[in-house]
Image 1 (tube, rainbow, N blue to C red):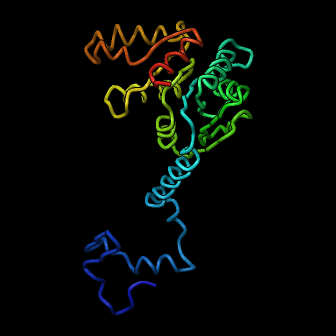
Image 2: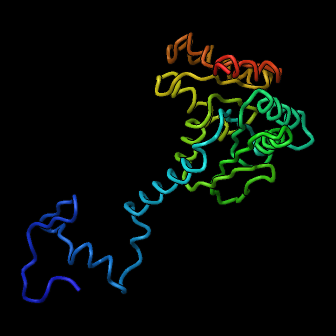
Image 3: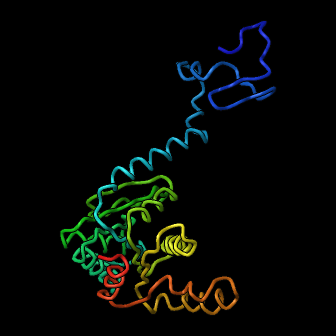
Length: 249
């Protein structure tokens, strides 16, 4: 049902806060399109509808995590093997963070994320997993006590930052690097209050740190003091001490 036959199409139309004129005028009213039982279902794939889905993800995330105690986000590769030294380090880090009074937040997947969640659970702390919808479904690991799955990376990334007082970054791939540089950028630009970022594994991170110093800083693309935005260590106790010191716990 649109404009009745014989009635001229209006030159101006107001649909809530939206003004449409001339060829952009739509037939019918907003209520009419809502209440019609027949019609195109393509609207569920439009950008305005996606905004509602995005909003719902923020609401669900905020609701699930609002009452968390002080927490540290731990990042690392989903491909880390359970029998590797990196996995064992993740378990020890998760356990030590709980002993220091923190909840542990990870991406909820396998590998290094599972290791940190496992350590947190074994220490009887709060073990959180923030999953993401991917073509190759991973699911949340068995050591997650509070899990939230997200459609959108940017919503998930906000939760990692909003509900954490610091980051511990184990060896990882592109996703780990994405989270690391997101945090470094937010701290560098003072979009968030400074919080500790600890890179665990000096041998793994050495090439990146050298490149930042010898190419990025040396080339004038960053300041020397930006290298102070993070710490590098191989020691679990030192990693936990660094986040504890800078968070004031």
